[in-house]
Image 1 (cartoon, rainbow, N blue to C red):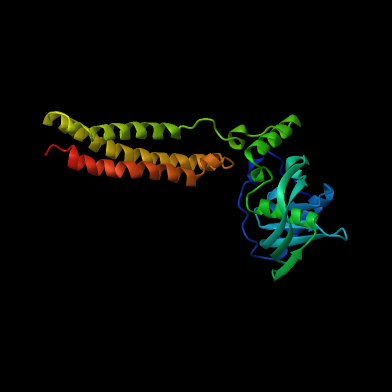
Image 2: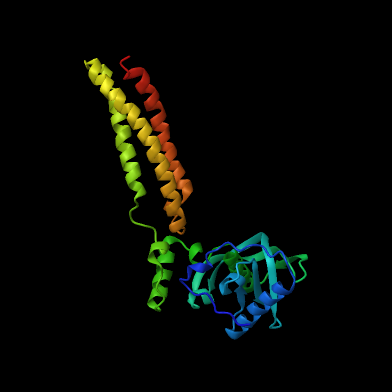
Length: 275
């Protein structure tokens, strides 16, 4: 049965496809839906997720014009990189150039659920295979582009009347998580200043006040870092194509502040503490 195709910027395509575990009638029906839909739209390749089935399954047109199904496919070796200009029904056949590999060694499950191995040496077929694997693993052509190239592709899509979800396609120029870091840095700065106060003729009452500040600042910074972490997780999911939003970068930012906070807090106990 012919199924409707998912088109950009439909985000329902952004799911990690589950493995095919059963190869009975429901599997055969799904494969037939893929073939019927691909035939209707004259497509060379089509993944299950592109017609709303979240399974690790796709079809490729073979040399004889028939379609072959690949379930649970994995690339185990790839070589000979090249730039591939590709069109995809999800992006309304607008050409997008990405890096691919011309030679692949793959494994997949056939229509009986038996594991098969295959080596692909044809560049065109290898590119199609990699594009379908991308869909299985929640990746599209846009995700493989550099930021400036992705911007150009999004503009091309918009120029054809296909408007993106700008919030999810572009990195934010500013982020609320920056406020967390701004406050933390200010608290750390005054903690650092407090460590120098004993060098001056400062009364015990004043030092006691600063020591109280250091204790409150220490707890506040820890709370702010926790808040920063959870908000960073939220942004990493929301702006998944933005490298500056990813969790690895945010953990590095947190570690730098902790590296400063711990010695400041210890030094405050021994230097600023008037008792």
